[in-house]
Amino acid sequence: MRFHVLGLCLCLLTNALAVSAQPLPERRPLTGRVTQPDGKPISGAVVTLSRELDQGGFGFWGGQTVTDANGSFSFPEADEDSYRIAVEAPGFDGQDQKQFVLDSALAPLAIVLQRLSDVRLRFLKADGTPLASSQVVGTI
Image 1 (cartoon, rainbow, N blue to C red):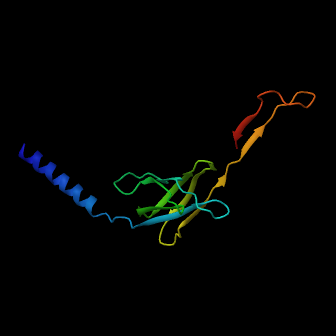
Image 2: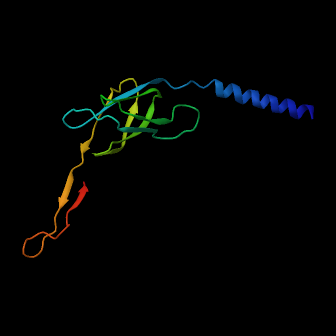
Image 3: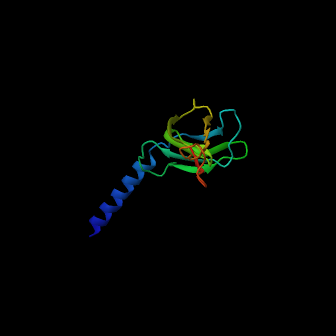
């Protein structure tokens, strides 16, 4: 019994040393700005960040944040790695799954969203007069 406990303790100690000896990835802020094509900021956009390859562990895996009044967002302590980013804002066509690598050469991300347009349809009779209450409104 004594040897089994000693062996277990030695095994746990060896594994703990191997885990603690691994270098941690570099961390840096990931920043960016979400705008319309004319450069106006989009506030309240939801920015979702996720790792390209989930390799487990306890490092930064991603997260979600909301842009401020200037359209800016930040993930203050992201690991250097490959990520995917998705951005959604009411009234705008979302940008889904843009891929990039966070390293020391990455400039702040510039994400441009296109505004959605309202479309109004009116159904007409054969003689060209509108059908009563025929207006349909949608967003594309």
